[in-house]
Image 1 (cartoon, rainbow over the protein chains, first blue to last red):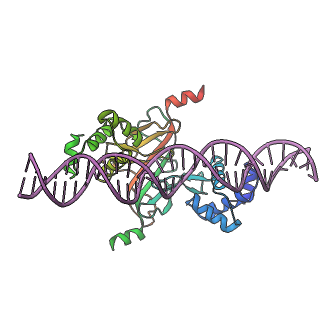
Image 2 (cartoon, chains in turn purple, red, brown, green; image 1 turned 90 degrees about the vertical axis):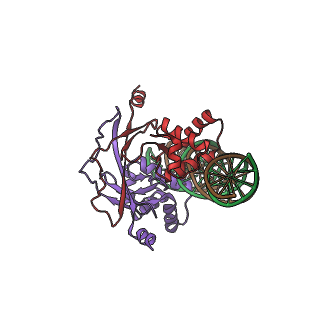
Image 3 (cartoon, rainbow over the protein chains, first blue to last red; image 1 turned 60 degrees about the horizontal axis):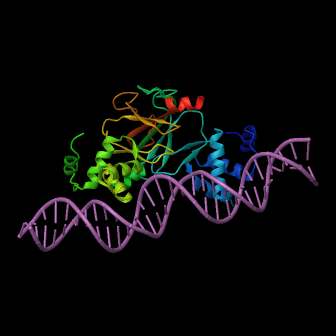
Length: 140
Length: 140
DNA sequence: CAATAATTTTGACAAAGTCTAAAACTATAC
DNA sequence: GTATAGTTTTAGACTTTGTCAAAATTATTG
């Protein structure tokens, strides 16, 4: 990804320290939650309000600069990698989240058999399982 | 689905009026939320506490008698239809939720390209789109 | 640098669920 | 049928994740 400042300007967003820091935090910590990111930003620029973290994440998500994923039993997570239609693999034990590229093809399962008249714009896939660490723990 | 009372006994669950009513409500209102179901149950048996609705839904979900789905921006929804690996189609406008059978085949996309050492047990697919009613509304 | 528009902060609020302890109930054994 | 042991239900406080609104601050434009 390019320079965060350039990214903001390209989308006509005023450049602020908070936005730069959040953007960098998302880039450096893929699949982090809003709380994780707030913590990161605080280490970088000292302080930020909870609300600002949400504001920034929302505006960046709306502009398509970052992507929000919301697996069950987990707060929302954010990532940098947009527009490449990849999916996610989530551990039921610890929530660890990994990227996986589409199993079926370039633009995946965008065609359900019966669309019930809906206009489908996204097929979201989450693979659920147990990561190696949690598997080891549950066996012991 | 069979008689709710039989279902409960088969799973060694004491039979209570609340459980029977919740089970019937789920059967009659697929994809309803906990709140919707509480409302239904109240119409049927007069009263039930919020906590009992959650207790019952949790125990039934744990036993695999019903299935919980949790689309983003929506409270959890429950359904009767378990074990047939179907997916869901959700309207971004009104949350209307429809069943769709698996696009890819019998046991679907259970194989991600790179599994990162995870043991995958489910591939959850949500198709996002706009239902006919909401499409009409947004055009006007 | 001044004016304007936008963002950030602060603090209250909301929705969806969970936790706890006490009361009420169910199932089982007599 | 009763008594008992074990669950379930209830009520109410609490937690987490996130939003709303107004005031204070900051970025951009000329």
